[in-house]
Length: 334
Image (cartoon, rainbow, N blue to C red):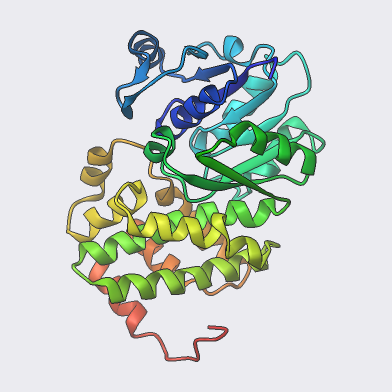
């Protein structure tokens, strides 16, 4: 592309996507709000905090200057935590010389309102803004290491979805497209809550039987909520749904799973958060998903128990008992 791509968020995932885009031949501006961190990235030409073994291509520039990052860029890719998403958009809007094209790889919903992030984009930048969400089973380290990966790009604007997928695609990275922005976002948000549950179960010392049951019944919860809010079943049974769910529930590269592991082993919430040292999206998302389930009359017992562990002081073992002692019912439709 003749114009650079701007990536906002210099954590592990934002950095991995910036490296991917740069390796694909695009000029990339990587922005982070911490000036000292960004200065270190510029000096080291790698992100020593999150991806220390991945060197930056020459066509990847780093900055803490929002205006410099956004200037004359073709597409803005946002990879900040969900709680920072709304605050960033109006700041970006003030530095744009042309109508924006927005994509995001943030996984989560807006905390206070429970809105999906495409609704926030439409509210702040206008409903006609080309907008796309990236989601799927992707660990930053593996993407940065050129390990084979597939994900989904969702947009109601088909041509924009194809354009974003084209930026990402290479012999190691396959990007599919869909118009189901609701299903993709709900899959990416809900799986983080369920990954905490899977971590808790493994932290308590349970085995593969419990993990498989939890993933399967967690998928049923994801499907129920997704369909209630307008998502498509094929999306939730695809990369952005069950694919991402399996990934984050079964591998310790998942911060949400590691957080649950710590809780299951009896560590305090504060200690686990400090040890992980990165954003744990599922902590905030558990409350949002729990609220949405109540509002829409959707039964999500695993999500409810995670919410109670995080917000009501329920012990992990008591949460397991609550799940196992529920009234028996047929699996189909349960």
